[in-house]
Image (cartoon, rainbow, N blue to C red; front, side, top):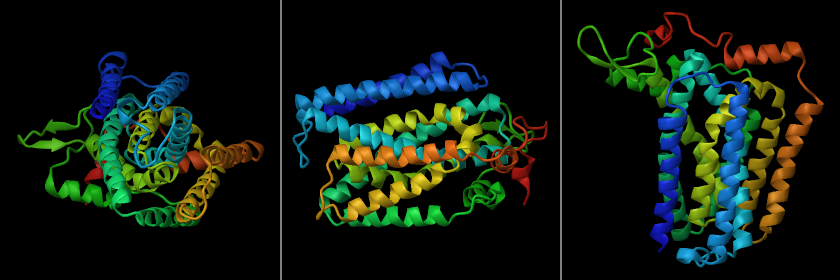
Length: 347
């Protein structure tokens, strides 16, 4: 019965993605701010409706859910799902910032960003599933792995706190880009939303847009090293970890289009993410000595994130500082010139 629950969820995800790309967004188009907000609302609503499903599934122990090493009733499972979703969704904000840097560096036209991020999210779902499965197996086999995950989060918090906001991104310095160009030809410029093209000499080559996709996938793996242990600090139940993570990631694309141009207005949110990861890391290190109720953890996490958002609104950047931030991190022009992609061909 449990395999049916997992299969049903995967079919639900595949159905939503097929409806998204195959019907609702079949044609490439520019995603405006209002449309992005609507889709963000849709994804959040779907995620919360699934939380209701979690309540009934665990409340009735359908397929043995809630009867494992971590016994759970419907209410507790719903709170843990919501907490895991909130943690992953909030940590995705930093991921959005890096995606914006990559897209600006390659000067990807806005017309093709939606399809690019669709495939990026699809790849992230597969990678997250593998990493969550491995993490669950490690924690169940070696209970001390919870301390390793806690240490990773604390180190990540320190690294984020010490990172400089003015660090620039050069795609040619990326190991992923150098590795890809070494083993496969790269077209001199983009060709619409296509990832592969045929060159004049007959060779098949990847487009700069595919290099962007590779970079997005690789950065998601790096962020998953932080976010997945963070969700394991909330619960070790694999179904709750997986579903909360997947729904948060599925909403990442619309959140990008809604927030990419507004990240400078939430400049203090980074400090909240530092505190959030540090709190979760300490919680994991002390998990065998101190028990924090799921509702209390949810309240603390919401308070930390709310403080960052409130501080950003109360102490905004000046218009000049905001303009410098956007020019530095998001690029000066949303659309590329005709020779876009040439930067990826420099030795």
